[in-house]
Image (tube, rainbow, N blue to C red; front, top):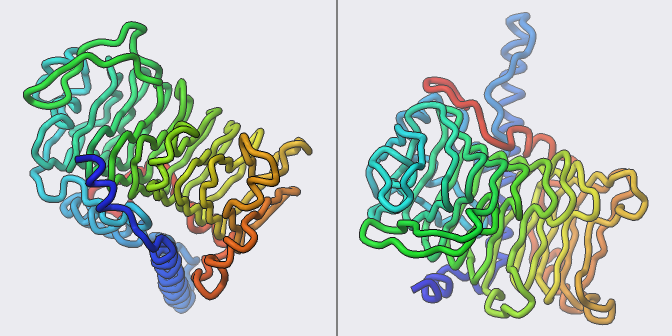
Length: 408
């Protein structure tokens, strides 16, 4: 079933998806500029200092974030995904389920009211949280398809425990949650329930923040991630149709891994959008580290890295558009890109494309591609909003402080 879902999700013309997102960004920025000018003129006429409306300059945020009724119309979020995960609707077709119990004491027979009970149900569910809570997972959390984890309205932290795993699932949204200080499960593994009528033995988890394994139509949005044992986000095992947006990542070594092995050519089906994220303090490398697939990295703010920002092997296609890259002081780490495990005679023919990126403090991007790159020339690609707009597009990255009755 996972292979069939991947084939159905895969876009044979990925440039069309790239162009759709860039076009949406242009429209969103234009609307925001018009609204801001009107508000400024109105305030000027009144003689008041400009205070400004709710700002939502990127098309994902503009779809929902400045609406005062977000708390009574939560499922509007399901129409807001963009990029390769644009068809993700999560638990839209299901009921609301409220997490009222922040404990995770029993991973084989979880109680109703816990997060674990909600995510293993067969039915679609839109999962919200009844209060501010810190959830320390005893073992990895297996999330089934057609689920939304919606942390708006309270502060939800998944911390000091095991990881979240989206495995062989279709249609999952994880939104507005802090994820940090996650570690590998106990050294021997253990029994975990993954559905209402099945539990089984799980080997030791890696200690990622989130692992997406053999899954399709996954959208990770407005997450704050830091300091996990392995990666912050790993997308592996023929997963595709994924968007990672509006996230803020800090204090970590291996940030994002897309495809886990040079021996997995089936990951050529992988298509991922990385948009409007802030890669912040204390990050070292892999933002992302790619293999095999097609990766659109657009309008992100790279303010810190220690080794490199974007790396890859096995001829991944990487389209970098409208990002801001601020290099570290280390002269040996000014290069944005790193080509892994291949001589220049090989990697020079990969398709690594940079357009309208902003390079600061000596940062530079090694473009590759030769003739292969012609398919991504200006005739085919809609120009992105340039890197100079990134601070506006990523200004509200990370988990938001949303209060009912007010825009987020």
